[in-house]
Length: 113
Length: 118
Image (cartoon, rainbow over all chains, first blue to last red; front, side, top):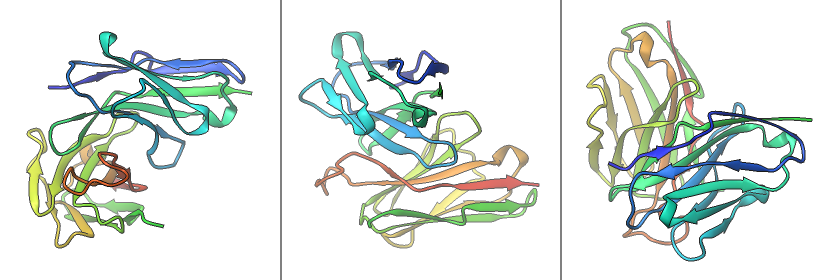
């Protein structure tokens, strides 16, 4: 079965630092990949998604992710984080015919002013 | 705005007392999902409906049931809540390959219902 690994459980950064959060999925073939964000006390929101085409995907709020098929990876990046980026970030992959989402364990990001 | 609505946002129930959580959507999506998210953990799929077809995850306890009376509404019933069932319950919807259109394969989440069991 498909699975997702997020390497960093907690990340602490200062404002303006660059961010990269790792995500690996377990097996190849056609994959649909997502990054969701959950701000404190709020619901899950889609940051960006990859279905096909350009492996560099641009999302909302200045986030981007790169799909590297040979590495089974879909890492999330942002060149300069802000305090408002403090949140939990989930990588997810679709598994199965009914769009079943398999989530990684999440990375909790804290950005200090 | 088209959206996914969950009621109530906060629910307190007693140990063993049945509880029902509700979800409605205005997106006209034919797939609806229920996830359980415990504190500091990833959301875990409990089951989903593809139209009226119910699909249970293999590790979802029998204590959890669901109903979908029409396209717009879906209910999560917990027959005998235990302390371990305290969690955030998330409803999500998506279009299916047959529906296509924008948001294809993307799941839209509601704000969740936080369940407390006393």
